[in-house]
Image (cartoon, rainbow, N blue to C red; front, top):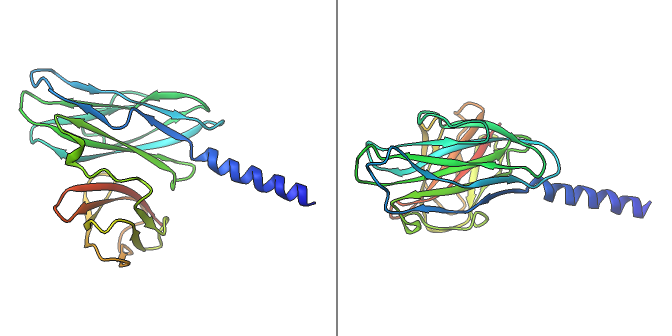
Amino acid sequence: MKQNLLLILSILFFGQLGAQNIEISPSPIIISDVDISAINVKAHCRITNTADTTRSFRWNRVIVEMTEGWNVAVCDTNQCYVPTVETEMFSLAGGQEGPLIVYAYPNGIEGGAIVEVIVTDKGNESLSVSNLYYFNALPSSTIDLSKNSIKVYPNPSNGLFTIKGDKQIGRLDVYSLTGRKVAAFTYGHEQWYNISNLPKGIYLVRLIDRDGQQMITKLINKM
């Protein structure tokens, strides 16, 4: 009986580890000296489902910074999308990898862009990875923090959540998946934030440091 119990616990434990296996490489991607006369500039990476089963994913594009007049667009395993598309779904078989490309369109304008693409497992929306794409920008423009150093808790949320992590945070903004800001809060240590007035769904929590720089974006699922 004890051996059977240990076997079941082992299966559950390693099964949960396997469910988290979403890999993105390279990360981050830095494209310097963008030719503004080019029709588009490609930042290419690969996403891999290292689990044994087919999984469905949703990507969300977040524009951290971008020069006015520029556009960016995402390509996944299904197709390349126009710049107005900010989220889509795709699937990967077990062990399969596919492209997760961001195209920048300078439109002849001097400037740059920082784009974050967040990929979420549709079978378990608490599992996600993200990648940053820099065009004529350097990672120092966005504070580089470990994804595990800041947590949104609880997630899913019944309408209240808190931030566990870094004291550099100055404020947090909440966005819908279409990119519309729906709430904003000043950060406070162990403070709770109320989004009970928002409809049920998935939102982006963008954390900003005290100097106004983007720190990191997290997904929160409101029940």
